[in-house]
Amino acid sequence: MSKDTLTITIDGKKIPATPGQTIMQAADAAGVYIPRLCWHKDLPAGGNCRVCTVKVNGRPQASCVFPAEEGQIIDNDTPDLKDFRCRLVEMHFVEGNHYCPSCEVSGECELQATAYRLGMITPTLPYMRPKHTVDASHPDVYIDRDRCILCGRCIRASQEVDGKSVFGFVGRGAKKKIAVNAEHNLGETDMTKADKAAEVCPTGAIVIKRQGYRIPYGQRKYDKKPIGSDIEQK
Image (cartoon, rainbow, N blue to C red; front, top):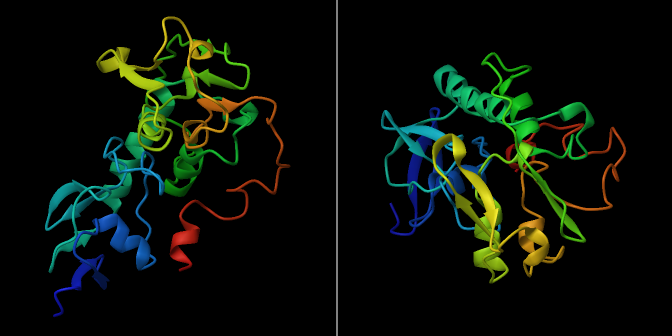
C-alpha cells in the first residue's frame, strides 16, 4: 500500500481514499452517495445535521467530518440507517412549517429532495406548528424561519467565505433559531444578495427576492433526477 493511498470498504465495495480525506469525500470521489443536508462543497464541514451518519466498524459517525482510515468497514445503504435518516428529515418537517406545494424553492430544495430520496412521502410524527417570524426588512433578501432547519450553512458561509458574521444561532433546544448580527433585523446588517450566505441555504429559509418561481416545473434541479445522482454518475 502506498503512503498516499488507503482502502476503505463501503457496503462491501472497496474504494480508494487519500490521507486527510473524510469518508464522505472518499465516497463522493468513488461515486457512492451518502445523504447529507448541512454539508456544502464550498464550505467547511459542520457535522450538524447527522443525516450523513454511517457506521464505521459498527459505530455511528458523521461521514462529513470523520476521517477515512485504512481498512475501515463502513455501512451506508442499510435499512436501519435509511430509517434513521428518514426520521431526522421527518423531524425537520414537523418542527418547521414547510408548505412544499406552494414554496418558491420547491424542486430546488435539498430537504424536500432528500425526503423523496429516502422515501419519506408524509411525516408520521405530530406537527409542532411553531410560530416563526419572517424578516423581510432587507431590500434584496428575506429570512423565512418557518423553513430553517438550523444547518448552519449561512453561518459558515458568512464567516468563512464572505468575511462577515451576519448569522448566528441563539437559544437552545426547541427555542434555538437563526439570528442576525444587528439590533433588530437583517436590513440593519451589511449582507448583500451577492454574499455566499444568500446562496447556500438548502431550503427556502434564506431567499433572494424577486427570483421566485423563475424555473418552470419540469426543469427544476430535482424534477428529473433525485438528489445525489450527480455523485453516483461519476
